[in-house]
Length: 275
Image 1 (cartoon, helix red, strand yellow):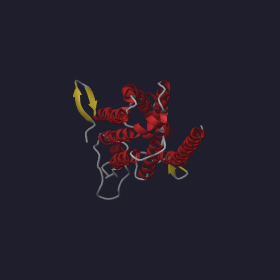
Image 2 (cartoon, helix red, strand yellow):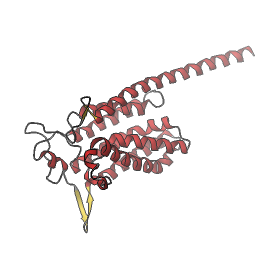
Image 3 (cartoon, one colour):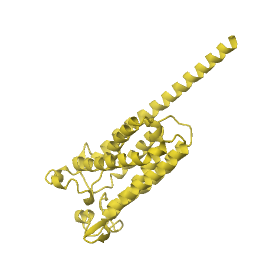
C-alpha cells in the first residue's frame, strides 16, 4: 500500500491519481470493444464521450462527498475542496453527474441514450472496480474496526490511520471492488439474452446500489445517520426502488411495442391476401 509511486523532483506521482487514470482507461477500452462489436459506429465517439463523462464524474464524485459526507469539515476549509488527492470521492455522485453529462453528449450527437447506456454499463462498473484500488492505495473509503485481530492496518500517513490508529479495519473498499467484478460479469451475461432497451443499465444501477447498501454497514470513514441509515444507503434505497420500477416499465413497453408490431404485420398480411 503506497500513496506515492515515485517523485519527479519534488512533485509526487500519487497512486490515487494513477489508478483513477487507469480506471478511466480500462472503462473506455472495454466500452470501445463492446461498441465496435455492436456495429453501429458509436465506438468512434468513445474518446470524446469518455473524457466528457470522466470530467463530470470526477467533479460529481468530489462535490457529492463534500456536501453529503464531509461538509462539517469542508464548510470551514473551502479552499481544500479541490484537493482530491486527500481522498473523498463518492462514486454515487460521479455516476449521477456523469450520467447527466453522458446524456447531454449523446443527445447532442443524436445517439440513442438507452441503447448506448446498455452497452456502456459493463465498462462503467469495471472502471469503478479499478477505482476502488485507488481508494485502497490511498487509505480512504475504509471500513470500521473489526474488533478482532483480522483486517487491514493502514500506514500512518493515511486518513484511515489518523481515524482509527493501528486497529484492523474491514476491507470495505476491497470487497466492493471484487463485487463490482461480479456485477461486470452479470451485466455481460444478462446483455447476451433478449432484454428491453435500457434494462442492462438499470440492472447495473440496481445491483451496484444493493451492494453499496450492504457494504455501508462496514464503512468507517463517516458515521452520520439519517433515519438510521447513512446517506449513501438512503441514496441506494431510492435508486433501487426507482430502478426496479423502471426495469419493469421498460420491459412492459418492449412487450407492448412487439405486440403492436405483430398486430400491424398480421393486418398487412391480411390486406395483401385480399388484394
